[in-house]
Image 1 (tube, protein in one colour):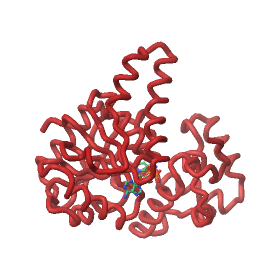
Image 2 (cartoon, protein in one colour):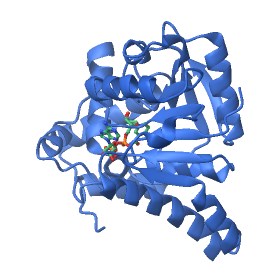
Image 3 (tube, protein in one colour):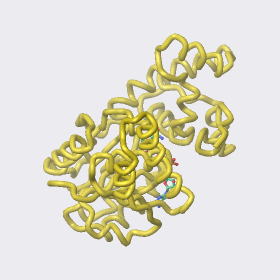
Length: 283
Ligand SMILES: NC(=O)c1ccc[n+]([C@@H]2O[C@H](COP(=O)([O-])OP(=O)(O)OC[C@H]3O[C@@H](n4cnc5c(N)ncnc54)[C@H](O)[C@@H]3O)[C@@H](O)[C@H]2O)c1
């Protein structure tokens, strides 16, 4: 199946970048949110990513405008009647995802594939909200989606082989590398990532070492581009906490849940997206 037009639902930390990746490959994409502020932020995110290439002399400004024109921001579903592939990127809560999947089932053509960027939730449960469970699949980008090459294609119980193949093809069309995985908690990447980051979280709480000091040492050692606590702020503490709790519930105490992170989420200090988390972030 060829994707002539795509949709992205949720224009937050991930949605704007996902729309950028799709439009960068020359595919028109409609970017929907429930809040105009996030639609605008998503469009601005895409524009600024191309602007960096313009500034570096790698993209001419007319081409930037042509790419930007491929993204349509919206608060409604009126432009979803001819999409072939939708990536849902709304908050990591099953009831929100199921509502969105049921809406997408109504407004998209029957052949359209409905994909979720979920980090940990059940694709099978999302598919239950639709009349086309065989066309529902996980399509898990990594932060920042404009840079990270990998996409996990996650098969729910009812996902058809044709849908998996179409998702892998679409990943290739937008210049990503797909790996197929089953619905195991954490899939592949977050299971590996969280097992190592768990030890840093545990050590921080056991020793009381300042999180900024840990970040500085990790970044200076070049073990990772940024330290683990700063990274959590960029990813969104609500999303990181949800994944951490899911892995702990699924695999036991070898996966750690950072207590201060839980407090910050309870205070709605979610990191860069709200302006404060482990760090303060200027907008
Ligand atoms: N943040 C990450 O690093 C990351 C990485 C990979 C996958 N994910 C997954 O991507 C999804 C989105 O995460 P995020 O970090 O972008 O979240 P986010 O909180 O930054 O953004 C979610 C957006 O969805 C919008 N939204 C809420 N309800 C909606 C609805 N009914 N219809 C349309 N839009 C709606 C919100 O207004 C918000 O703009 C989650 O499933 C998360 O697990 C996140």
